[in-house]
Image (cartoon, rainbow, N blue to C red):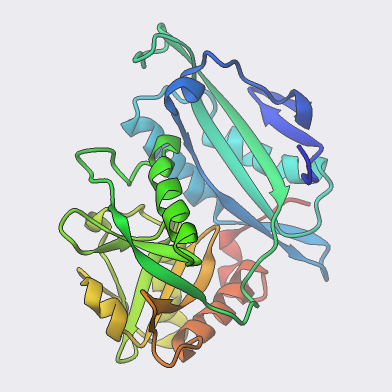
Amino acid sequence: MAGNAARYAWLNGEYVEWPEARIHVSTAAVLTGGSVFEGLRGYSDPDERQVYVFRLPEHLTRLRQSMKIMRMTPPYSSEELAAVCAELVVRNGFREDVQIRPTVYFGEGGLFAHTPDKIDTGAFVLATPRRSTLDDEQGIACCVSAWRRLADDVMPPRVKAGANYQQSRLVVVQATVDGYDGAIILNGQGKVAEGPGACLMIVRDGRPILPPVTAGVLESITRSTLIELFAAEMGVQAVEREVDRTELYVADEVLFCGSAWEVTPITSVDRYPVGDGTIGPLTRRIRRIYRDVVRGRLPQYKHWLTPVY
């Protein structure tokens, strides 16, 4: 794969060279998007020559919840996958920031089968370098997408399923074609849900406000992390409630959060400037705290970090 620095992947119990990490075209993962996954970040600490995987057990718990709803038979334990996530970083020799993606997929068998006697269930893990954007000083311009969020009784967003991310692709492509950096998705009731692959928060009168987990959002680990950090480190209690579209236009601050997006400031929505059009003070402060947490600089949160070396 051009531009990829990874030498090894892990596939169904074996570490294999990157070009050999293949599954058959007849798998349900290929034919119907039958897979669930997690996206994790690993952060480097050059002083300790260490890479920390952030909240690894919590991500694997969510992976098992996705498997349960999809009626997948877990092919490996959480403990086995945790060991693989760490070892894969070591085998590739990564000392920089990385992204790790464990995936469980339906393999060959009946097209709509789910029981182990009718279809195979496999797993793979990828690890590749990915730069952190927590120190970037520029926010992004977003639109409100024309596409509505998937509903819990349609294709539940609570499941981190590969097939769900086709909606994210539609949202991102539309936003890009229309000249935006990103997009915000409304749910079927016209309330704010989230972004394509990230949860959303607004700030009004110094208080962070989040759509509830029943608004059609992924139950984000980064989201719950920020809620805890707001309270413990800033003395600010976040509010979970429905958010109207027009609140995006009058909010003091708006941000995306997620493992991939980290804490990303949104400085305009539908060409309305958010606040004064720059990164707001609460966003700036929580980004700094989050950065120190994930890099192991705050000892009280080291229990969230899994060292790989």
